[in-house]
Length: 323
Image 1 (cartoon, rainbow, N blue to C red):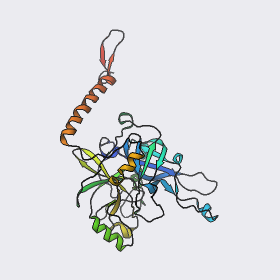
Image 2 (image 1 turned 135 degrees about the horizontal axis):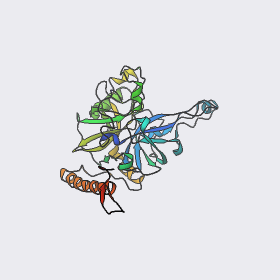
Image 3 (image 1 turned 60 degrees about the horizontal axis):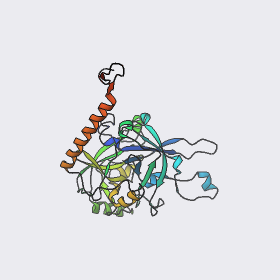
Image 4 (image 1 turned 90 degrees about the horizontal axis):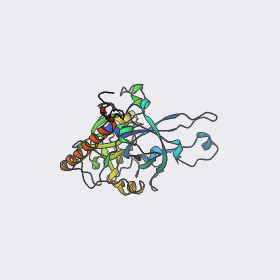
């Protein structure tokens, strides 16, 4: 994502970056050589057991040798044991890794169509459940009918795989970090006209359009969250599904995002009804009640983890302050 702005996950782990994850999958290699792993896409945590990402991120083409031999089945869904999810840190070199137990893609998603593609969303079930205290992650909220207006500021997150020599000036070190940009929602009608003029499809009922000049997503950002913040809570409204890396498009093409609210039934069905879209945003009163409850949990956890009773003299010691 270019240009890089904002703070690192280590500085704001309790905020937006805890939602972002990175996906690794095998890269096709020559015969007789072991496949190398590389960052494929960015994803977003919607539950401690589930992640959503763009569907095209979990597809890959067969080896060139297969095509040469006449066996070209088209783009294939990644086998679950070929996919790795990196989480817990903005820095990929310090992140933890979790395997995948299931990948779900809408049956009507068609990878062979040019981007932006309809129904470009996938639900991934993690092999084990993550936790906020151990893994430093927290799921993002989903909305059934989000309200956002043309010109509204939103945040996109991703790990761009750009050429370090590109005119955006991205360094090799940046490839190891999630980045964020503040961008704006663009009129759907405008985007539909622009995409049509370039003979590209754009469905304004199932997509969101956003972006400003020389700010946008690149390869590696796809699948990452487009999110809005209200009263300290982040809501997922879109998934990145375009990455116009060609210089001639970067300055003129707004980015397209899958409108997540259009896929609430799909998400619920493929998370065993554990993840549902909220009917509306949390009110200030609800958040205040939640804060009181959360503060109580934190205090109980502090007592559990920091206070220790000495079995010899029966005294209580504070291990956090006096180890």
